[in-house]
Image: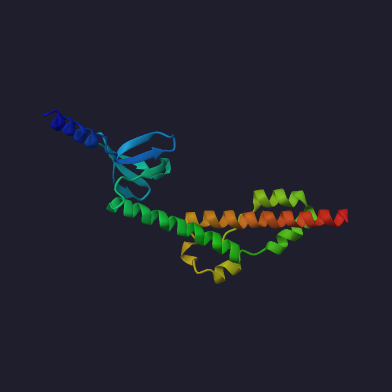
Length: 176
């Protein structure tokens, strides 16, 4: 009789302690429940018998219990699409964004002023670069915020690097 009682207690504990989906907010608070739906920009979460709709911008991470569920598949596909947009923006900026020779010349002529000016003022976009506009296969993403953010970050980094290279070349020329 003791074995049956212990078995039922162990089974009850296993059912009670079985983890659900775990949602972590940006404030590092965690909640356990069930993610029921992922919509545009928000996550529907059910915990303690109540439904909550949480903006995606407030969520740090989601850990799913069932990785075969439809909600997880939707989440994974949306995440992959966002990453591919960012990757496309980064690759387009690296391959097609021009004016690198001009940035070297500015760095050589104006030194640290050009470096600071490029870092603060430069606003590279695919629409401004004729080469990007002509050669990129991602024209449909030119208005996508995720694509633009990654494009600008990469192109601006390259421009600042080229300006610094121009300034370094001038310094080396003066030292020689």
